[in-house]
Length: 152
Image (cartoon, rainbow, N blue to C red; front, side, top):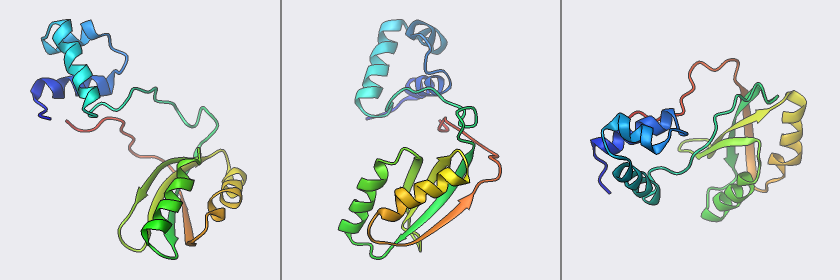
């Protein structure tokens, strides 16, 4: 799929304002509403636009703590990696999880209300996954940058 300058404008605007009406978006990019809507549908069908969501303040929802958790497995075989992935996908506290290179196999960003709730997450969920060699937790003191938009 080729993404041209108009597609990039559409994506940029939708990243800032996902609830914009198609007619208003079309006006901003200089298209009529029908071709604009067609482009949006194509971008969705091609998987460039993967969804629409509300951005929520985690502090206001009572989850002020972000913890970066490194996990090292006992072995890095496909079965062990897949087992870990299957388990972690179901943990709602895990906001992001990446498979990594180097000494750590996975890096996750976990949210929690307090230290006790994070301890419960460790005891009841994460440490029950078979095959984990080591878990390292680092607590974020303050967020400096948060972006929800990719640079276009």
